Amino acid sequence: QVQLVESGGGLVQPGGSLRLSCAASRSIISTYTMGWYRQAPGKQRELVAAITNNGNTNYGDFVKGRFAISRDNAKNTVYLQMNSLRPEDTAVYSCNAVRNSLDYWGRGTLVTVSS
Image 1 (tube, rainbow, N blue to C red):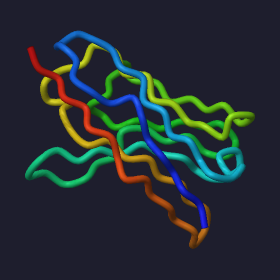
Image 2 (image 1 turned 60 degrees about the vertical axis):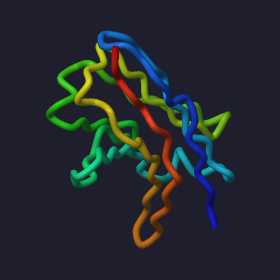
Image 3 (image 1 turned 180 degrees about the vertical axis):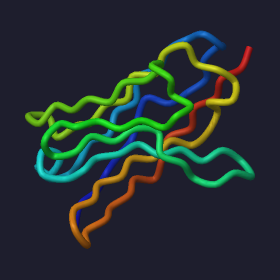
Image 4 (image 1 turned 90 degrees about the vertical axis):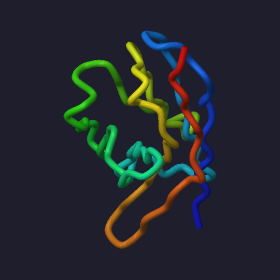
């Protein structure tokens, strides 16, 4: 079993930045595809960013160069740097780890973008 714990969410003004962290309970992030997803009230969950075991990254179309996913294997932690935040980025952001049939989720961290 793997536990994923997100942190770093909060309230930020439009145009601001946040860095989310996802800490894994075991050394998996270098061998799993790690992803960040978000779900806003009344909307479906959507992919924000993902990084594969060989370092390839993928982003949702709405990111448009504003966010960056990275990982620190030594710390078993994946990060999501979010810049130029917009009110429409308000959502619960959740961390995901997947490899073959193994699929783990964190509980999420709330990001609120508002003035």
